[in-house]
Length: 99
Image (cartoon, rainbow, N blue to C red):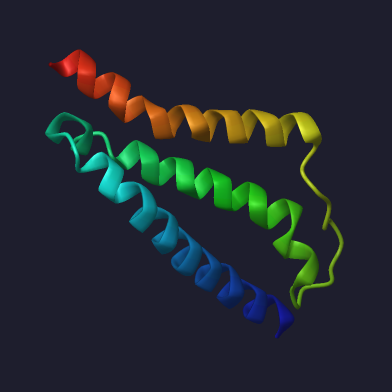
């Protein structure tokens, strides 16, 4: 039962925080029509950030108490966060190249 509750919690976290994150950056991408075509890269960036946040913080406050609950290694967290920052910025770069 705890596993099902934790899965429901993950879905709610992704829906709530993913939706809030998308609302924040969606308005930025709609400024230019060229960046709007690449806004899906921002959505992937938000999912990566939520993954890092869950693995490093949220998994320790949930219902699931099984084995394997460890934080991501520091260098993996850094790589994922850096990648998501690049993905957030990339629609502007790709939009300016498009013309």
